[in-house]
Image (cartoon, rainbow, N blue to C red):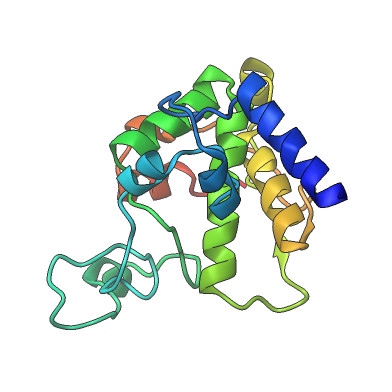
Length: 198
């Protein structure tokens, strides 16, 4: 009886206040929400270009040719980065860029939370984490934090921390250098820009 009542209540809520995609604003059917609870519709999720093998074992950049499989790219061999491995579910392209901009510069926190949920589910499906793993959000310089009013990295980290049941500590890193915005910079320029910033 309680199950039927809950189902009827969900249907009523769906009629009065239907779920809409946070990106394209299309309605999301209840059946689709049950398969994927993230408030980004299937069409928008599928428009994000997934990163797949072959890719660099360190920076994660995909290779054009798939003949050699996963290996370390020339850039990481000639100029080894300060991290062991970088992972991302999607390429930084079109709809994903637009969604990130909506979140970071449009103050649409729900878009950021939905993207964080997608990232968390990707991590669950792709990796086994040690129990002592710690999430450390990247801090903003205090001047940028004052202008923007929030740190997008903390919002994303909080969602991932909750879904993965993983501890988060935002006090470990402090940004001591006010860097240029990363948006107009390419990969190598971004690394140079944040050198000695923390």
